[in-house]
Each structure stands twice: as C-alpha cells, then as structure tokens.
Image (cartoon, rainbow, N blue to C red):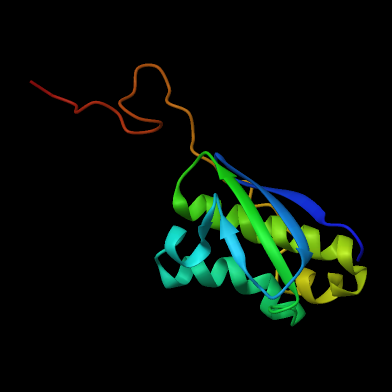
Length: 129
C-alpha cells in the first residue's frame, strides 16, 4: 500500500470519513485520540472491531473525520468506514468482515413526526369527558 486509502461510513445522521495509512496503530477522531473522543468502552470496541477481526490493529494509522448525529452513531459509522477501507487495502478480508456483519449499513433512522401527533406515533392524551 503506497498511498492512503479512504472510505465513508454512515449511520443514522452520522457521517464519518476514514483515512487509512501505514503506521503503528494510532487512531484519531477529529484531532483527538479515539479513547478520549469515545469514552465508553463499548464504543471503543466498535471502532476496533474491524481491525481486530482482520488482525491488523498495529499496522495502520487511522484518521477519522466524524460529523453529525451522536457519539454512538459516529462510532458505528466509523466501524463501517474502517471495514470498507480495509477492503480497499486487501480484498481477502471480505469473507471475515462479511460474516461478522461489518459491511452492512444499518438503515434504521428516526421516524419523522406526523401531523396531529405529539411525536412520530405518540398521540395526544385522550379525554372521554
């Protein structure tokens, strides 16, 4: 791999761009270390999952630009983007990543608010009298 690879991941309203280059395993998100940006351990595990599965945790430096949504959506978007970038590096990772479900974009998002309702489905309180 002579030049960096990049990929985009999306989840809910979050969009992340990932830049993969040769290095020692440093992961930065919006200029911060990923462990300070994602303080919860399960979110850190989401970001690390594709790297651990492909067994390349210490071979690449990763720079992530995250925008929109919340912290969880950004972590899951980063997971998808890292998986896609790893496929550009080596297509042999595909069976393992696909079996773990890391190449699938989660289509679920917030349902829109309907007119005459309090939220998307919640109605106003009914009064019989």
